[in-house]
Image 1 (tube, helix red, strand yellow):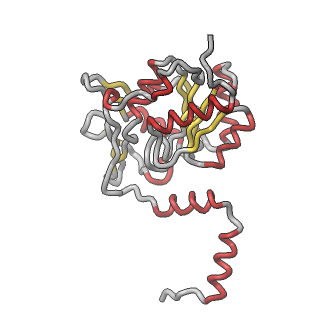
Image 2 (tube, helix red, strand yellow):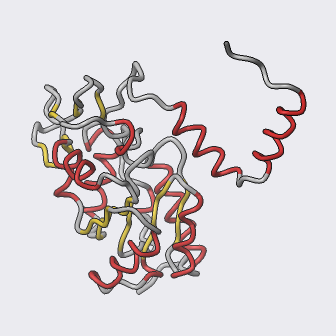
Image 3 (tube, one colour):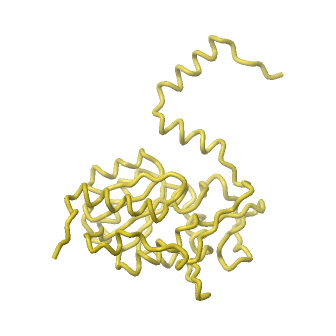
Amino acid sequence: MLRHPSTRQAQIIFALLGTLPITLIYSMTRRTTASASDDTTTTTLPAEAVSAPSTFTDRLPLPKMMVFDLDYTLWPLWIDTHASPPLKPGKDGGLTVRDSSGSSFGFYSDVASLLVSLKQANITVGAASRTHTPDLARQMLSMLSVPSETGTTRKAIDMFDYMEIYPGSKTTHFQRLHKQTGIAYEEMLFFDDESRNKNVETLGVVMQLVRNGVTRQEVDRGVELWRKRNNRTKKEG
C-alpha cells in the first residue's frame, strides 16, 4: 500500500532537490515524463514551406559551420530511451520512422527547410550527440527524409557533412570536429537543448540554447548571438 510521505520526509526530499542544478531537475523530469507514445507525431514540412532564416540573406557574416544536437533539438525524443529497435521506415515517404512498439517518430517541422537552407548558404553542417545508442541515431537519420514540394527527397543523413555521435562531453565532439574540418571554433555555432553543453563555449564555440526543437527563429537568434559574441555585426569584404 502506498503511503504519503511524512512532513519530515517531504522536507528532506525538497532539501535534496534544492541541491541539484535546476537544469538537471528539468532534464530528469522531462526524461521521466516524456512519452514515446504521445498522440501527436511531429513531421517536418517540405523544405519550401518554411522561409530560410532572415540572417541568411541580410549580407552580414555567417558562421562557417553550424552543428546540431539530435534529441529534443532535431526530433522530440531521446533516441536511447524512447525508440525500441528495430526501426522501420513509415509509409509516408520518410516523414516518420516506427519502432518495434509501434511508436512513430519524425523531425520537428522546420528541420527540412533549415537543412536545405544551410546547404544553399554553403555552411558546413554537423551533428553532435551524446546518445548511448549512436547506431540507432544514425539509423533514424538514414530513414528520415528531407522532403520537397517538387516531390524529390533526400535522406536526412546525407545533409550532414560531419557527425560526432557517442556518449561523453560535447567538448570532445567539437575537438574532433575542429580537427576534421580545420574550421576555427569561433566560426562554429551550436544548437542544443541542454544548458550543461554550454561547456563547449570554453573552446570558443557559440551555443544557442533551444527549447522544444530548433526553428527558423531559433537559428536567427543563434546567428545574432554568434555575431554579437564575435563582434561580427557589420558587413565584411
